[in-house]
Length: 162
Image (cartoon, rainbow, N blue to C red; front, side, top):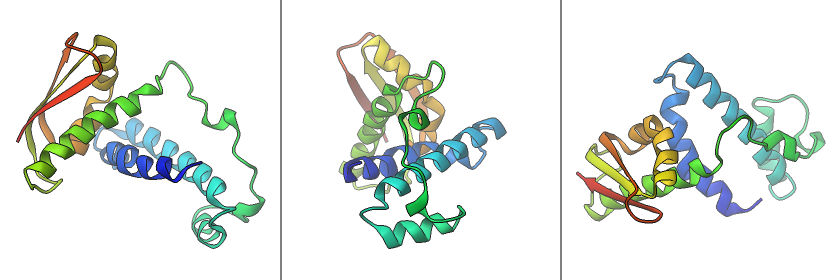
């Protein structure tokens, strides 16, 4: 596991699901987000344990019995995506969230500043994936009006109006 993954997870995934985990999109959304966060924490603690033994042991003790150092090593089955979910959704949505953050930074605005609108443009498949995470993206980016323009160009482009 790389440190890059950990920081990307914190910067992107945690921010994207925070609103949903607090129950702002209903109980089933909150339950799903919390279950995924618990699994991610468990796996990351087990992977970091050989390198950060005391920190991981302490965090593990807050919510798990026994020692993280005696826990089974994560398996591929544990992290396998179930159903028809597309693993590319997170990385595509993170690109859009990064574009929104960049616009705020360049305008020297707080990340808590509301965005009047954001238009996500790109190839149809990529835009469709991002649209599946629209509620999380609106909440994390504080976007009031989020629009999608599929079929325009390759990859993703984000136009932000503050």
